[in-house]
Image (cartoon, rainbow, N blue to C red):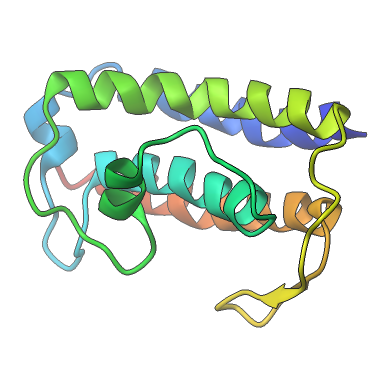
Length: 152
């Protein structure tokens, strides 16, 4: 079951990375009129949210630095353009975070998961419910990226 859930997130992530190959770093950092963030921020936010929803909510260490998390957490916005190194890190984490999540899930490390409610009103009380929520969240941000790519 975990493999299918991760694949539901992996395939759109691969598609979006392929779609963005033709864009310059400047285009990926551009904040289109009517938006308060950019394509790179949305990708980084998806990585940060997976870490928060799965690891931090369970009281576990995540795989990103606190500065990364703070830069891409909910409520943040790009304070400066991301450089090539940061974009490469985001692209790497975009895929490796899913692999790590699968390994950690199989290792059973998510046993201590408290109940919480998302900003969208969904109550989540265990890792399986968190994994059910993530594709919804990622779909929102992939939608933003797909809209932004036509404006940059």
